Image (cartoon, rainbow, N blue to C red; front, side):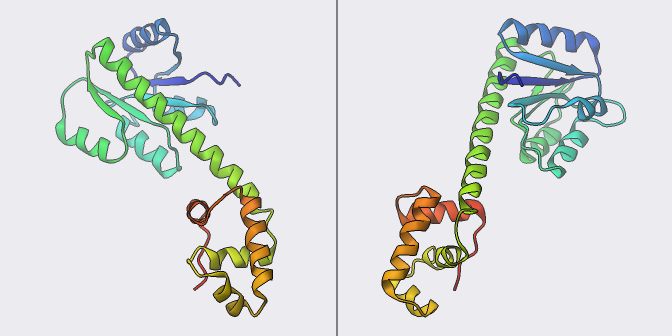
Length: 206
């Protein structure tokens, strides 16, 4: 897979697609263009670090509808909307729904390029965050059942002595479990452990 950032361009106007593709490629940005939302959904490659430049008004499935479809599928793909006319309420709704920007055609090259670079930077950040979460979840699977149990208590802020009493075991045993689970998760402090647990959705033990 080519790891260079990618811009998906969805617009039913061939001339617009051609012009925007040429502009982005001139800046060394990879582009894949589609003439409809349906074509994009069928041709999109998962795992790409990418953003979506999306026309608002298209037949059958328009831009906002595609945005909702992607959101319902759990996609974190950053979206830049393009519209042929200013529509402030639609722009507000789109941005509230997570769009990076809402630009009016004809869009200035510098404005579009700036928005695309922000969107691709956001896509990279999200990909890095997702990879870190996957790695952390893999580490979580290394914990024994007892270590998972101790983890649930540690992240509540309880001292080891109280955890030992709750679990009916010795203080030194809890200290060993605590040390081992932190090593396996790759964290050096309780605050880091709490943040890792929150990212993974680990439940606290009251």
